[in-house]
Each structure stands twice: as structure tokens, then as C-alpha cells.
Length: 113
Length: 112
Image 1 (cartoon, each protein chain N blue to C red):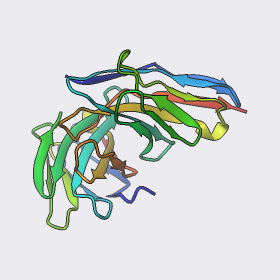
Image 2 (cartoon, chains in turn orange, brown):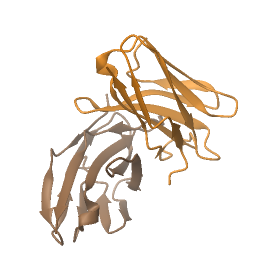
Image 3 (spheres, each protein chain N blue to C red):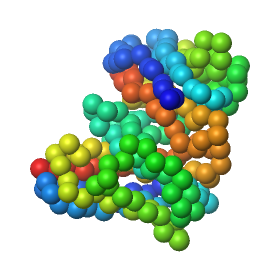
Image 4 (spheres, rainbow over the protein chains, first blue to last red):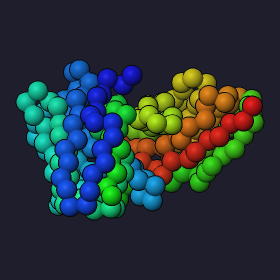
């Protein structure tokens, strides 16, 4: 058990809809990361937060947004969903120090129909 | 930019065979290197890491040595088990950053 909790485990929704994915980091970790895993793109870094502030941005679409709350949990919002957004979305957490290893949750599987 | 290249899978082995999964990287700085493993239906778990040249990371019988001269971090295990069947990801964090760059993953299938 990594200590990172993601909810829900599965989401099925229709194109054009909006969903929210939630992540609780490991106790003591200040940094949260979001990754998207798909068969064709592999693991793509989306965004990182550290203690409530955005720290780094990867290949995150404008339709997607995230935030980290004062209690350090994070939410990833996906809107105007398209079929191609179907993927596994992973949250990871770390101490946020340089070179700190990341600890991953079990992911949320999003299916857009 | 930074990148990680892994051998394509699947790698199919019999139990007790020797395993090598190749990984090479490019980085602008001086990265730390990691291997993660993903079992079916689960998230990624940190398997081992190395933070400087010639460091050897090891865990659960797996080993990898940070080779700066060849920019490589190959994963090895002397005798694989069926329970090692999973997808293995090589990754790096470049110096001055805290985000992981992953390779595409290599699936390992071990048969009895």
C-alpha cells in the first residue's frame, strides 16, 4: 500500500461531460502529481502541485484543470470530455524535495462513451 | 528535453531464467534514475533507484547500475518467478526538477 488514495476507481461518462478525480497524498507528502496513462501515449505527466501551489506543468490540455487544497488533497477536473480522454489517471505524491521518489495511487480508470 | 528509452516487450521468460530489461536515457542535467513496477490492476510501485554514477540500486532480487558513460540503467534479475510478471518502467528525475519522465514500459511475462 503506497498510502496514496484515489477515488473513484472507475468512471464511465459520456462525451461532453465533466468529471472530478480526487487524490489524497501520503501522510507527510507535500507534493502531488497527476499522470495520464494510455496505451498509445504511455505515462504522460500532467501537472504538479507543491503545498497548494502549482509547481510544474506537463502535457495538460486546456480542458483539464487541477488544484491542491489546504489539507493537501488534490482534484483533477476534466471537462468537455472526448473519447480520446479515456485512460488511467494516476495521482502520485512525494515530499517534493529534489529527486524524491514518487509514490503512486492505484489510479482512476476513466471511460468516455 | 529529457527522455527514457526502454526495450519493447513483451519479454517472455520461463521461471528461473535470467532477466535483462534495457534502459537508456538522455537528460540535460545529472538525473536520478528509477525503476517502477506495475502489477495488473494496480498503480506503479517504486522498485529501486540510484542517484549518482556507479550507484547500484537493488530490491527483491532486482538490480540496476547507474552507468553515466553509457547513459544506461539496465534492470537485471538472476532468477525470475511467475510473480514477477508485470510491466516495468524506467524513469528519471533530472537535477533541479522533481517530476518523473518515464519510458514506455516493458511487459514481462514469466511462465512456469
